[in-house]
Length: 369
Image (cartoon, rainbow, N blue to C red; front, side):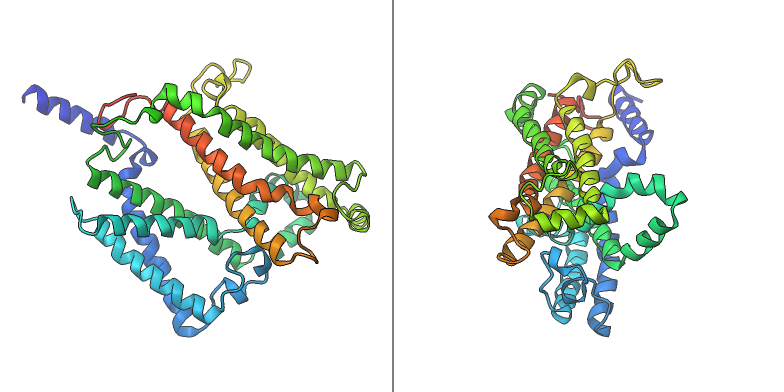
């Protein structure tokens, strides 16, 4: 066996020893195809039976959804056609070295990912994530919370969660196809021509402003909610404030605000040393390198969730202007949430910079910087 063959064999062996999540370039295109096929079957059932479509006029929380005004019969047909098209596109993307219709395939994959990640989900998914720590702690000891949770978790939550999963899978599958057909490394995207902004030094420089914005926006939201708890009706109708204080619902916003503040602090770790290496005072982990995925995965999910939720608040604020919508006397009720899309975009950019800064050499192509 010559040296080249031995090196290739060693590289392949090392790749096979990696965890399944590190081999995402291999399985993501197939997972996206399976997801599209399953969704196509479900959407076809909505279309044929005329029932079950969980969005639009069938959604009890439609006022928060960007698709709240879509008639169920029309929506079922559109989603069935889109899902069946996704199956065809997914199969086409699996063809080795095929560049036929490349721009159309990439465009469809990107558009489908955007709809699944930012249009279908709304504030309800983010609310479930935000309240999850409290639910885990209190639900085993509080039958009321368990009952409320059972009533709150409806089919729309499951559908939105499935959409988010599909969105990430299709984003990954489209990225794999785009890189493969461009002749760059499928895993890292590096090729013959290097982009200066993707180098670790460049990423460390341009990451700061996105981090500042992503850490600052949730502080604005949290501040208004805790000011309400403190007894001040800042930017909200005094009668509404009094009612929320009396029934205890004012604490819901404070809890989400606190959850957002935790995220704000963690966001600053994307440009701090403790975001790269666990602080010494942490038992067992102290001094060890922070796994990149430990920061990138949750930050990416939150970036998507706050962006989609923020877009839903835009609809709520401006479609109901003059009643429950945005007005000067009650600006704090919806005003801070209108900054959430900016928060999501900034967090996404900061997360990308963190990844570029820390990814190191590629396990597939061996390139670095």
